[in-house]
Image: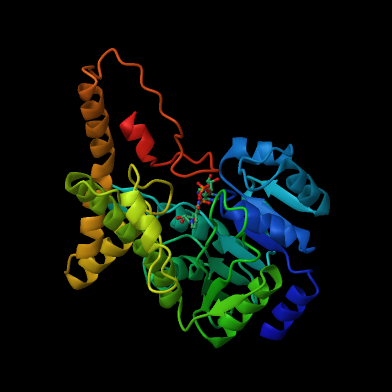
Length: 350
Ligand SMILES: NC(=O)c1ccc[n+]([C@@H]2O[C@H](COP(=O)([O-])OP(=O)(O)OC[C@H]3O[C@@H](n4cnc5c(N)ncnc54)[C@H](O)[C@@H]3O)[C@@H](O)[C@H]2O)c1
């Protein structure tokens, strides 16, 4: 079974289905198409599917020219679940938002339910959506197994966290090392073979839970460090010290320091959400609060208010009021080079 899948991956005849054609799924689908795989990009958003079919990309890292080349190479965006029939490899990259502070895994569940009827013996399914440790084994797997096929016996199953950084012109899907995992050794081998074809370097880890934690560790690390410089920026101003100059100087240290900049808070699909997935899971499973995440949330969520209070104070110094002042906001997305304004703190400031 494994040998046959590896042969199909090697010869690029394995049919690939990517469920979810957003910031993560679209570049992945196009990369597979570029390499010669027959690729179906399945999405429930009919408008998005129609635009992709007409050659219009909604992701700034994917140009219309790249999309046109992929369409010519056999990439097929679709909203019809039947087009997923007979897939050899399925990747799931659907949203994982928070709903009232708790992880909303309904999109992953829906994707698994859509895939299950089309699962065949010897196929590989990989989850890429960011989520807490245990999701692949405890939530995703049973829904796939409702097909009657068993993971590890009849089909291969794995998890690989996405590291897409929208707007980053240096690090792309292809040259960023990709962490991969499987529920057992044959599944890991299948996942390695598929991603090994797509990207320059893969980083295998011991379990799907480890791979799930990797992504949350990376994003929690950034969240906490941004909160650290944000809090320091507020104190430094009160102390009369220039925080920017201090950060510039600290960043000259060639080891043991990593630069983070203060700002109006955190935004996008990752930092305001992913650490809370981990905190929610730790609290529910272990009964402990994840204190670093709670503190980082508190500091970062308070930043838009702080920015506004600074605007009020600066106008006051000029004997002016916020009311009747025309205020220009430059940059509404959560970082440069992206049109993704989800969760952007700038909207709160506005
Ligand atoms: N955007 C990023 O920078 C980034 C980086 C790393 C990881 N991630 C993670 O990757 C996952 C996907 O994020 P994204 O930014 O690509 O989201 P996105 O919103 O850009 O795209 C998700 C797509 O999935 C579609 N979808 C929803 N339910 C579906 C279903 N049942 N079947 C088929 N399609 C469905 C939506 O219509 C949408 O087009 C999330 O878990 C996210 O946390 C995102």
